[in-house]
Image 1 (tube, rainbow, N blue to C red):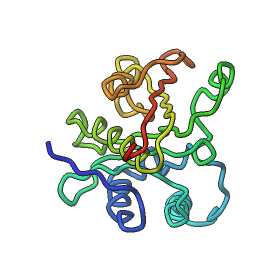
Image 2: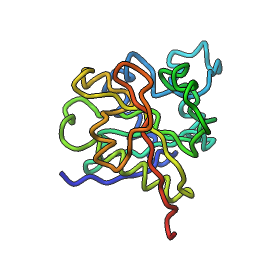
Image 3: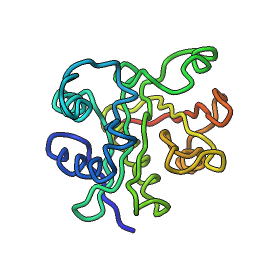
Image 4: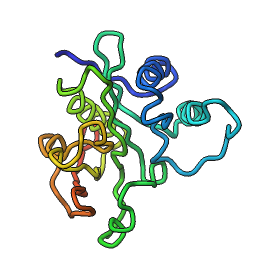
Length: 190
């Protein structure tokens, strides 16, 4: 399949929102906010996370590589600096072996229903790495799980095999099936 990658910004918001809405707000209305800092804005709104996410997009504090098949957004890979996506899974175990924070984190990966197992996740991860290179590159961490241990719909951080195929290496284990994986990304033009 031929995919194109676009960054999440105000110009791609409607396509991103259409994918989220087609998939019930992603995990019951998350809107991929679970890895961002706590946020109590819009608490009385019908869809507070939708508004919170849009606020972040508008302010440049939400990054993602969106995967398009034609005009339709079919998946994404969220990334950000540690301050932007501080709430990673297995945080306590992660902190035990922490030497230094990475420059970037891959936080959440999602592929819409009907598009799974078609290379969308790999395209999203590759797109995120390209966008990170354009933003100056640096050390990138991800927190994937072994795909054979977790149902595909619950691989929030992606599958370990997808990261390994993209050139990440295992750093350490932080959960029964979860790993810290790392990759150094050169800045574009370096």
